[in-house]
Length: 293
Image 1 (cartoon, rainbow, N blue to C red):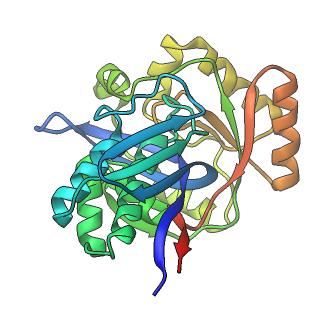
Image 2: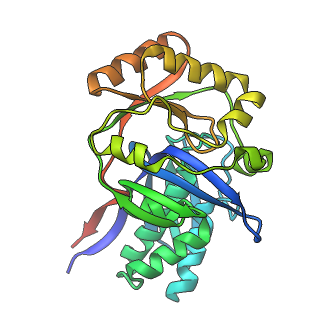
């Protein structure tokens, strides 16, 4: 039987196709309703077993490579749950900007859990793996399966949704937003329900809503004017609907097709706005095995 030498893991980013905060819970967290969509932009991980745990990050300076990184904590959590050594050599090629609201760190953590489980012979079943993921962060379980899903509670209760082909243009203002800071800015006036029927109808092929509501938008654009300007530029370009992903800073708009997405991304780049055309995926983290006989 061939032995797995290492795993190449693709860890997709996500956008929020609408985000509502219902209120603050007694435990200090918030209940949310949001529709998460995995997209083709993502980070790449290489994971192999080793005598000790080590982490290397390429492509983004300043990202911690110790326990401050969620990937490190994911490796420790897996080892504790599976009764194995935490030893692994993990390399991350970062393409998802931190502080953008695209869930790059959460996806990398999900990819780490899935890879270590595979390398150790799948000791944890799907339920236990999802439980570990939920303990690491609200978005982490979503990335194990990806696609489009309604997320409730803290974001860990997931309901998979069907959808049509969706092409998205991402736009990156020169800003980074802390999720913890963003939640602290919210008050009762920002709480409300997600218009799920309208959004789910669009995902099934109906008319596109003019906006995908996001509970953070009003507070964020008051503190980060460039984010507000970027949203205005996306609206003026003809993309529809337009929204903020997570608590920002990434803004996005939905294009009619792939050709429009690439054309508008080039146009935005020519105006000095960093942009990437992308599309919604039907999967979450995915792995390719490197084997030796």
